Image (cartoon, rainbow, N blue to C red; front, side):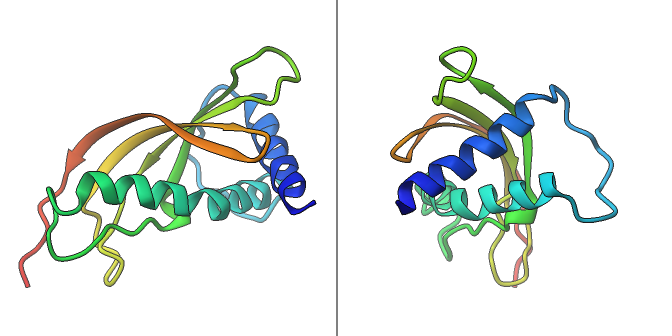
Length: 138
């Protein structure tokens, strides 16, 4: 039952984003149903995102800590259905700035695409590292 609820929420959020094909640069000034659904999706996907980023950044890029993702620092770039109208295999692409987790200093920028299907199953489809930021010395 819990898995079905999670799959339903993910599907609902992705359907909502499917209706828009561009990302607005304006920051929302008030709460909305769409913003709450996006925040729920980010909360559920953050563990998957952090696990995949940890595999890329630690220990090759940063040796002292594993990267942390703040859900409010995830920007949805695109959503789409993989298997036509009302199909429940969906893809979502994010731009993410992982941080050090302590002082929330960004350490890089990445674009990641996940495929989400019922079950729920979450699979990383593509990871493009866009930038590595210079981490300030202590």
